[in-house]
Image (cartoon, rainbow, N blue to C red; front, top):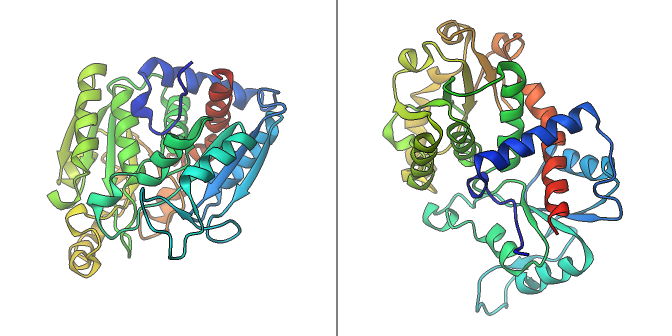
Length: 335
């Protein structure tokens, strides 16, 4: 049987995604199980985490499994990822050994590794997670790299819980101000899942510089065509919010200025008015609001929006636990 990883939802059909969401909903109703009994998962964190680490550790425990948490470069040896490198620097062992040894110990490997924010042409290759998938002999799960597929599923489940059928619901993915450049992972993933589920998606951003990588835009247009939805880009706040069923907020860095923060900063500072507030939400179709968290209040969204009944960010965060159980159980069952 071919080894199946969970690196991006783009590798999964709509039917498979719907199946994972159905299983997650079942885990939400009945949290405990034995799907991972006697199994183990290695969780490798190259970057900090709160929700991801907590939900994966608890998810494995709830299904009878055991999670091992490692932080390479801190409580585990620094890892080299370049092929043919002469390892005379800070790294102590190569991914070729790490992934294969861990595969002898555990049944699943999950990896969280953010971009370096220096050169997008390098970061977009997603070398860390791909190297684990290349050398591992057990399934690999993406806990956030340049996409965040687990967040996608949690977001989709929360929307389904509140809206039911998502087909052709108007979905606004809006850029928001943040005082520093952030990963495009959640934005990429939100675009993928919303178009995959047939929603009518508007990507709202200040200028063309903030349009997402052409790879994800292309996937989005493809998904929309295949699933009866739509995708468009807008720089008009009022037009984008008008009649929206869902507003999803995220800040991300402008790709043309990747690694050149001082050049991007003036553009970013000029668009603080993209904050999600009551006036903008009043333009929607009694729309839901969500965010992946963490969120800087009164920077990305106001207190009034975050504390309103329309905000489903906490539901989405909870759903990380349930969807990740579904992913782990699915991968284990296929082995």
